[in-house]
Image (cartoon, protein in one colour):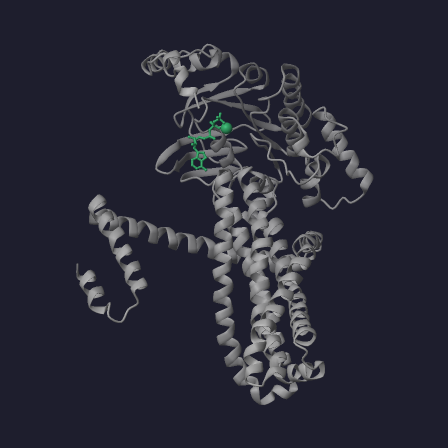
Amino acid sequence: MAEIDKDSGIIVTKDLTKVFNGKAVLEKLSIAIEKGKTTVIIGPSGCGKTVFIKHLIALLRPTAGEIFFKGQRIDNLHERDLGKIRMQMGFLFQGGALFDSATVYENILFPVRQHTNISDRRQLDEIVKSKLAVVGLDGYQSYYPANLSGGQKKRVALARAIALNPEVVFYDEPTTGLDPVRSDVINELILKLKKELGITSIAVTHDMTSAYKISDRIVMLHKGKILADGDAEYIKNHPNDTVRQFILGQVSEADVAALRVSGTKFASQFNPKDFEE
Amino acid sequence: MVCLQLSNRQSGYISPVIDLAKYALIGTLVVDVKEKGWVMIVEQIGASTIATVTETGQFARFIWRSAKSSVSSVFRGKTWPLVFTQMLIIGVKSVPVIMVTGAFVGMTLAFQAYDQLAGMGLGEHIGILINLSVVSELGPVLSAVMLSGRVGGALTAELGTMHVTEQIDAISSMGTDPVRYLVAPRILACLLLTPVLIVYADLMGSFGGYAISVWFFKINSQAYWQFTAYGVTLWDVMVGLTKGFFFGAAIAAISCYKGFNCKQGAQGVGQACTEAFVVSFIAILALDFAAAIISKSLYSIFYPIRSLI
Ligand SMILES: Nc1ncnc2c1ncn2[C@@H]1O[C@H](COP(=O)(O)OP(=O)(O)OP(=O)(O)O)[C@@H](O)[C@H]1O
Ligand SMILES: [Mg+2]
């Protein structure tokens, strides 16, 4: 692979390493993310995908290594100076992270109110309406997050993430918890944002259908390293066993063995006496 | 063993309770040593020392950031609505509970002090005692303790939950400094409102004391106020209110810090609330002690010109 330097892409990491309590979650990860393309990150649960994209927006700071955004180093920036950079980014949290004390309307307007001085009520209404329409939730303005379903929360969070028309959007599992039709709407949305606004997307997903559809490039993380990196075709035909098993959703021999070893039949673990009071 | 002998030799003049406590302490240490060995103990002490120092450093950094943001927020129009919202939640809704606290303090003081003073024929001086205690010590300290429970607990729980559900990260991710958006308005609101709430506590304390002394013990009302006016100076009131600023800032800063750094999960939030209350409580007492020392030395400096203030 060609040597990565800080201008190789809109976001570049060099030897990014993150250690939590003595355990390395990311190990010397170097990657350059191309402007205007959609990069999909896949990998087994708990392999550090969320941790990785949180580094790209400097919500987490690396143990070692460097991160660049548009050629500027961001991992050592002060919180105050990160504001300007984060304004150009949108982040969809895995759990939504909506403000539960504010309505959907106020949630979506949060970044708008923080960074613009638009105060015309009609204009603000229009912004919220258009963003909600994108995720199919126009009409829910006055709802509180507690009164939305899991999938609806995710979509409102997505509307909030794109409220300022950012240049780069990070999606942490955008389609998890959505029905197949709604998932596909989100896929179309990501494609549309790329085509119309040239937005760079970085999406974490477990949904391979979605990954193949939206990606220009798929990166598979495994044990803190990049295991596979290429376009959808390349990944589909990847020679490595771990990669193939992951994308096909097959259980590996080791996992089956683990089930067998844990041994005792579930049926024999309890007998009726255990439940008597 | 040395310790044991030591405490045996001294037990003649040390109260048995302290002795018992010592034995218990030594007992746990001995058990600890048997189980883990000296190296482990030393390691443990070292680890907890490092943890304490790290936490203190973190807290100091947090305070510094919050102080800077609070000061700059004063000059930013955008923050004022947030401060007002917090003032409503923190201040206005605390008024009833603060007034009840103040009234009971005054009434209890009057009730307990009367017999002793009357026994010495000083019954009419009771106004000084009640009002001086309320205005300079009990009003500010008890209000602050009340607030650290009512306001501090809510602040920690709210920010802690926001932290756990990544809402604070969400604020950062949208390019807003969460310290400026969440902490500064809360500190400002607490700082500005605690003295005001103390005024309420003082007034109610004064009234409660008056009610018991004059209506119940039938003290002459005029004498009551005369002695009060003679004994309680503006200086005492000002010292009491000034303490309020510091108490308010300390409660808000500690509660916000604990919320921002709480551990994951429902238990984490609960633990953070407990810690916030305990630390605030100790901070209030420590600040009160410091204030006593400082106000005393200031008083002696300003004593010659006190007629001017
Ligand atoms: N704040 C933290 N402190 C300690 N360990 C953490 C922290 N955050 C994440 N980890 C650890 O890092 C590892 C990766 O977590 P991460 O959330 O990135 O997984 P993920 O790949 O996003 O998984 P999933 O697909 O289930 O969301 C996990 O083993 C987790 O225990
Ligand atoms: Mg994740």
